[in-house]
Length: 237
Image (cartoon, rainbow, N blue to C red; front, side, top):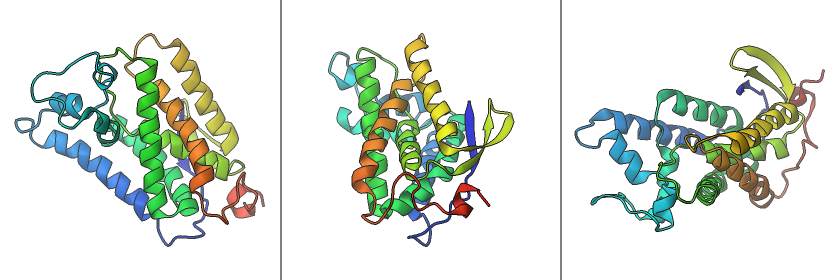
């Protein structure tokens, strides 16, 4: 529904968003490693062994011998760095690229990584509680990225974003409109989707976690709700 392209918000506290760069690199590396040699680590095996499977997480189901590849609770983290297709990876990384730098700037490198992991964990748990008996692995950074989007909304709601709506219509809207429409779409899908092939509840859970955690992990001098946003940020001349 909405693909962010550019926001133009300058960095205030950091020279560069190194944690965002690192997360982009790790997610990309995770995708490439699955593709590298299917004889060593088949993609289906990696996704089943490192993804969040609600039924397995809660002990109702068991996997074949050799799986999972890590303890079940750890899949709440390992699942964040796996993606099932290039489009899956590219979509999540584009959101992280546009919104991550300013959220990291508001928190600092270490707290931003902690924030990302906590949002991803909350997203995985939200999905698992929504479909506790599911046998389908949940993978991808979208839940954690949803938390980043929520934090950006609370930090810079009045910024004008360039984005593609319905994947083809370029528009420039305030963040609260663009992200609000995106969130409404996630909620609508969560209540109307007929299967669990997409983790809509993970998106909502990650968003809720991000909205709360940004209040605790931001720098003490970091204002909220765009109070310090100047003309350059908001796009108002």
